[in-house]
Image (cartoon, rainbow, N blue to C red):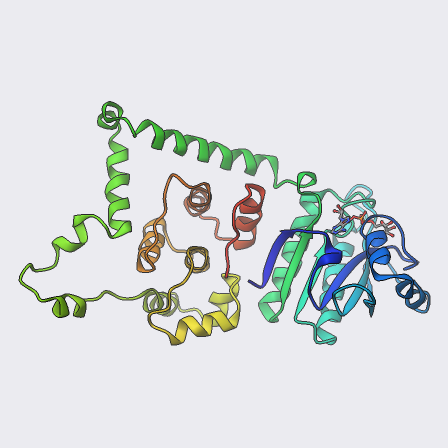
Length: 338
Ligand code: AR6
């Protein structure tokens, strides 16, 4: 998955390069800067002393010494004043300059902390948005695996409004499902039957699918009637939407190698998050998404928070995979992508 949000101590990341949220002296400090210098050892400070500092919004690269990565990029984020002092542009510039430096040094994987969101006071949700926007823009043009490392999960939240909307949607639908478990209430709830019918088609386990097959066919003949596979459906949808393969897998946050595998193997068995990632990239409706999931043997269920969050976004017509991943992360769910 090209962009991942994870919870980790950045000094433990096994990537080509980690990014430090430094200050313009580049001579160390508190927060993640302190952690990185402590873990790297004194040689890092010695090298930093030779760099002559760095201006806000810019970045410089050094070796990584005792850290498991190969390099450290020291980016200097802005101090947050009131949002009217170029803070956003300077923060974007930190990510852009760092990614360009990583690319120039042939790094294939990079881990970022949420620059400026600690001692420098940038509101965490906004800092995360800037990080996601800038990195995903870069990934549309470049192949790289980028991690946003969130140290203290409780310290950041997606917007309160989005969080409570999703929570409400989950609550309402969990309640429906629970309510419908009892026969008397099932009779009162017609929408449940609509859903249940749909689910049995989705799962491919009800009688519905097999009703279409003639009873006197041999097993070979039945197997000959095999439906379009997941891979075939994906390629067909890409053609129908008139988009390029690369546009599709990048929007799906799926890397090129995995996409090539799927393209070349008509019977490729994807994971559920991979199918959903493609459904989101192709902006499929809920029915089309269910159809694509069924091709890979999956369904969308109201008994799963993950599924409900996906359904929430599709119903809202919001197909921004990075925003969906932010929400999944906030609700402790697996993220979309490979
Ligand atoms: N791994 C990942 N993220 C971390 C870690 C860690 N080990 N430790 C902290 N964070 P900050 P800034 C998160 O304050 O706001 C220094 O003194 C932290 O939760 O490190 O850019 C420099 O020398 C927060 O979300 O950096 C500068 O003077 C994020 O990293 C100044 O602080 C950034 O917090 C820079 O302030």
